[in-house]
Length: 107
Image (cartoon, rainbow, N blue to C red; front, top):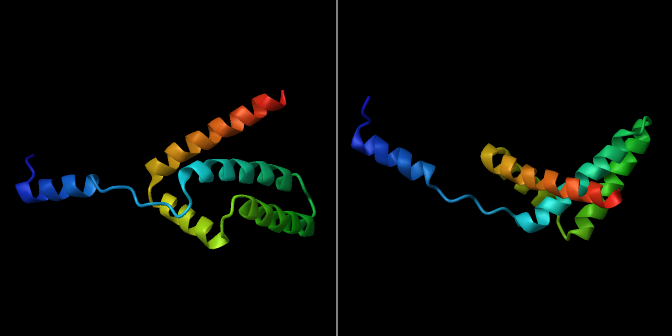
């Protein structure tokens, strides 16, 4: 099946759109997400809901402050990534690499 030339041009143009710029640059986002996942692992070991909620607030506040990130920036970044699954997958491969390196350092 042949696509009409205008439809073909439209598809090519849409597929070549540049990625939307993230509010948090990737070089800061990868280590932040790695630390968030480490914090979540610790939090999930807790059985008391109050303790979980308190730890979650404390860890996230600390990490946002450490990486100089506002919660709104983080949420906006994650919303953009959720709309671009290939990009999110590429990013999470880097997060996994970061976590693997951190685990190796502990051994």
